[in-house]
Length: 232
Image (cartoon, rainbow, N blue to C red; front, side, top):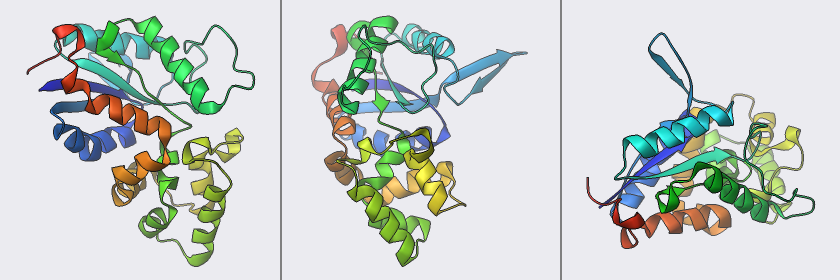
């Protein structure tokens, strides 16, 4: 069995990995655990959650690669509001489509971290809440939407090619749209619950970048990293 450690941006993603992704990957012989990215240390206490500084995230990723040399490491960071010091491709984005650009950012991250095939970077376009638009009817049930709110969710989803394309300004990121419709929206509680109601099959059908990450993780057990990341 392959062991996979995932460094995630916050508690929402940690819950998602623990409750949905890990059981699924276990069926593919990939044993998965997640922890929130480290943000600081003070008086022997470790603080986690929130991608505030790439430099600190870099230390955390490389530390886990070093501390657990028999495991692979992946990430689950939001593209929305990446820190300014995050690794960038050599050529500016310009008109590059979002999913292609996110893939380039992942490549830049991999080049900066190193770790060879043991490191599998992933950046969610544009943020975790995009996954909730994979099936707005299911999401509306979890959020207790009325008919007008459901109609608005359907309108938002219908305006974009995929859920991963939803975000045409900082004020209209997927999470901001949900908060506008549901002021009581709590990411940590409702996010994983909605994705659980939707199901991974529907999410990967609607979200191609997420689907490619899932496929890559499922295949880890068939392709051990450098012959090292096995067993545990």
